[in-house]
Length: 282
Length: 282
Image (tube, rainbow over all chains, first blue to last red; front, side, top):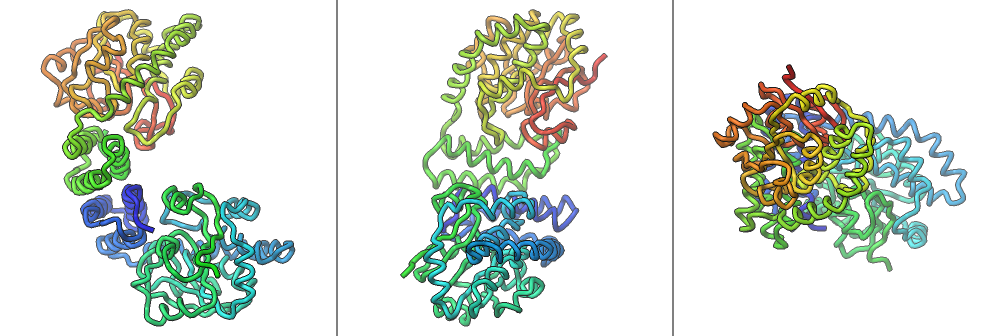
């Protein structure tokens, strides 16, 4: 997905919010906005929002000297998510279709996002998503592909969301690789966040090599590229990964909540819709 | 009121919206965002948002060659507002306190604003504001000052809103000067908009000399500066005028709806609150 003009004011909003999370120095906050402002001219709009987003967050790190501004927030999100797991496991196990309920749980986790301009209440939003209608659902194809698959690559998104991903990976019960970002970027899950979420218990955690808040194929490590092509099933979580993978040629499934108008429009749904969408299916 | 950091993403949003109103050429729209982006570094934040806003809209005019992008919108707003006047006059005349109801009508008109990031439904919002509680009300002081005043300066804001201002000016029934902007900027009322609204029937229309979407004292003409100081009562409509006049030493009354968080915070109220606030009262 290319970047839309709407993404530019959004980058500014994200830069302001992230700069306030990172420093109390108003001069530095202003300096960050100045630098992001100057950067806009270099945005050709041909790349994904995640690629330009990475540049915005790099500026914040450079000006403040803070490499992982969301470290504490990520830890809190994981902790908060873990507290909901026992109840959620019960719901899944007692559901008529546990796999479908686990998919819903994984999508619900996708609301834990400090990049998009949207407040969330994890507990309340979770309840809604567990019963919300899908705007796009390729669930029967998904179930079929999961059953056939020997190996699954699950491309993670945010820390905290990762805890819910674990439920779906357990439910699928296949050899699974869980992909994380190479470096801290917003609240996206990196290796240690995945470990804190317990994903090593159900999967092999692997870095994709990506240094942006979304999949960028040309940043993939050689090992990850090969894995991406060779696994039987790829599951992509969240908006940032959708941006980078919506045009690929291999089959995969997107699991996400459309949290911004731009992504919703690109998918052809409404903001706040939930989606389980397969592409290039056999 | 100084500019807050929140205003910077808002300038970008306004630039995008206004550029789309003005041209269908996406390259020009992007070019506008590029130029606004580069401008941010020059914003010292010591001036009012309206002053920087003027620079943003100047870029749009320069790049598109369109001097009054909101011309048609302003005409439509005036037409739409005029259709509501007969009913509104009835409501005012049959009210227990017609002056207070006319103040409410004038504030209701303040929702006609294409600068702030807020959609509005004139007819529906009008109904609400006619019964909404004031978050700040210096109405008794206002009524007293109106009764005493021989001359009133009424600093207008947007085209369309101007039609509702006429109701209040009629109700006050004093020698009134109605101030408009010197040049077209967003949908702010200029001389011809005031005439289209019929304000010459109840007041003397005068340009303040201001070329920004809000009062800027050092842009006042000498004639207007003298008028501003010498009249018995000054009424300032809307956010842009509040920004420029909140720190002046003469007595005046602000009539507005707080349409953005930043202004609301500065006044000490909540977004969407309505205000009749006097300063430097005798």
